[in-house]
Image 1 (cartoon, helix red, strand yellow):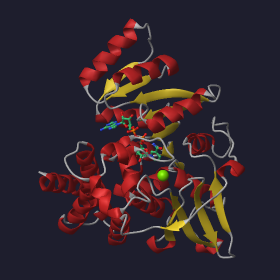
Image 2 (tube, helix red, strand yellow):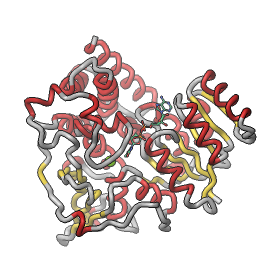
Image 3 (cartoon, helix red, strand yellow):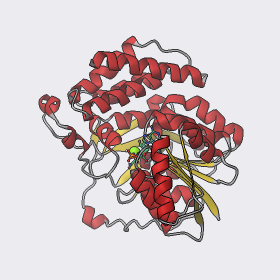
Image 4 (tube, rainbow, N blue to C red):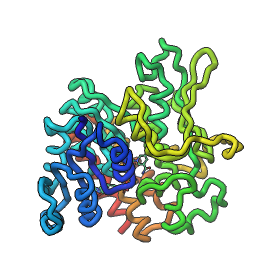
Length: 390
Ligand code: NAD
Ligand code: MG
């Protein structure tokens, strides 16, 4: 029996993870579930999966959950709260697998705690890796933790890389990592009208159902930019060898090119339960609940160049990766603040990329060799971006 902690269990990835686990209760037990403030949803998950621990952001929410569990006669789930408790349930000796599915920089510390404790880490939280790539990968190497990418593109690349070494290794003939991108809801929209788009339009992704933040990131294509940085750290690929290809059907999840001219791709319906099941069971395969891919029904697979004029955020992410140090952390922090402001209708859609460009130009970056240095850059970029908005 494998004990699983899900950081961010009430989110889109968290719910899909529980769906897969629910199909294999003979293999996986839920050790801990965590949510920021969604008491009701976490309560329902606790009733169904009976975790040993449930963690919420604040004491008040934790008390509410405790009362509800008591009233429902659910004993055996201890309710904790706060940042430290997240790292505790992610590194507990009884836990074997950690799904890192908190959104944004808030996921950094508990994800790092899981890596340091040598857990099998299923990484959905790309922001943590963007911020602290070197530190995170060093922690994985030092503890001997298994790292399985859950982001569908990186999961696809992982599957297409050589089995003996899931890395960008030219000695094994690997030449390029090709990340596919749907292009989001605004792929064909007149660029001059982009400033007028609403949060509702931006979160309406054509192929994937996801949390609000990553949905806006998909509309700006900052999501793909973060994924370029993520691919760099996960596989050791240089920026110039990571290419983005627009593929509106989202059936090919990404590809790897080899020196003999072969291009390997991983295909499937756009449903995160496939990479989640892959990560949970690796190196085995288990059923995920995802319907088999019907290629005849899909009919056509199309590919286009990624357009940096339409999607300046993608360009900014490449720039941050090439700059290195804390530049990606600054990019990420400015993006998180700008996306939240956009969702709250404080700024327009095109202000997002302008604010991030400003932060990259103005906030001083440095080496990313300590967690404190990274968190300091994150804080300064947030302060700078907030001040530009107000
Ligand atoms: P979501 O918004 O649906 O869920 C986020 C989860 O994190 C929730 O459980 C929430 O309670 C928790 N959370 C939010 N703020 C928190 C905080 N400050 N402290 C502790 N917990 C907090 O997000 P999602 O779409 O599930 O995405 C989660 C992560 O997975 C993101 O990093 C995203 O980029 C990545 N990802 C998601 C998808 C997808 O299909 N949804 C695909 C690839 C990667
Ligand atoms: Mg992705």
